[in-house]
Image (tube, rainbow, N blue to C red; front, side, top):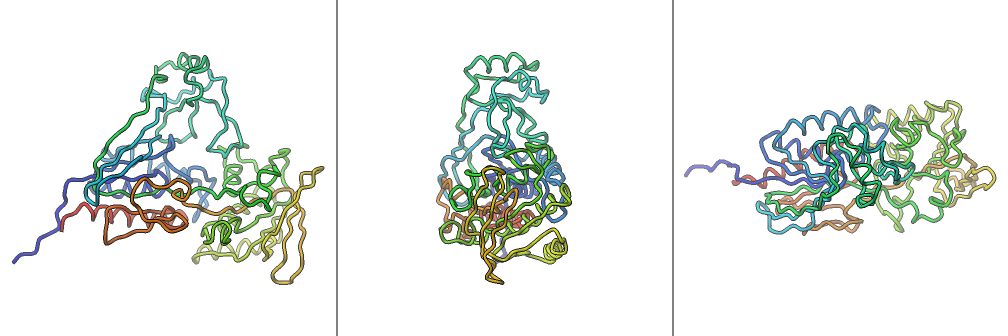
Length: 425
């Protein structure tokens, strides 16, 4: 009797989500010979990482990682990228899935050179989702300078308007196609990796923290956009109410996380995100005071611990162990008073600051938009991986809260699990 060696069978892999986990999964599978369909609902790849100013461990801009991955995808014919696309239905089982995908019209075709003539002609402005509504963009827009695909998008609201016609006529390359229609595709794949990522927890649900009521209270992802050179203020950290450079800022940790009323789990990234954003503030405003209100500060790993230790040595950064109970606004100045009890001294603290950043938690996308497949999830919406069954897997933050490094490591493993589904033993 001879042993049968593993042999590849015909089949493709679908990766749902084009953030850092999805990019890694797709590239790892494609670069060892498998066909990959990469499905992304936004008009660009990059996910949350594309919205950051800097990320760990090197505090480098996201371009330094995304640029390389975008080039690898562009150069790999095995990866078929579908942007503005969403999975509607999944039938079948491991090794043989039939997937229905709906692709929304971009209204801009492959002729686009990103010359920007359409945006110059466009008169309609819309809120920028990429910047969490903190600025307006033209209704004919490039999501961000390094967007992939490098192609403009026309917002549907101007398609049948005079402004839409103006945009179309302005394009010298006949790239604007206002007759584009939504398309439905049926794809056959052997394995599916759900890299659907995460969304910031809705801070408006925590009424006591004042988000949405007081303009000088923002979220941690909004801070990333404020600090980013391509953000709404071109990288200048300023108070939303008056554009003033803040002389004092408070970070409110666990805003929604580790709370049975909201997110019962630790979101893993929030502590390090606030410490990182403290460096943004200290670089721009050396005299500014930073107050960090926390329950517990978690620095997972030696490098993160060293980073935390360096921040603690800064005399202008004050750590206060205590959960924030409420906030209030001084109508005359726009300053925010943060109220908390110091868990070490028992003292009630009322700290007035010029700006507040809520370290809002990480919620899996599947918690707010149910996956269109028979995928098991936790009560909080994280995908549970059944490796014995195979076929479908959750990667990165769709599986558990994680930073970029951990997400990449996990995505590499899920690429392997997907490949194993396609191999007959």
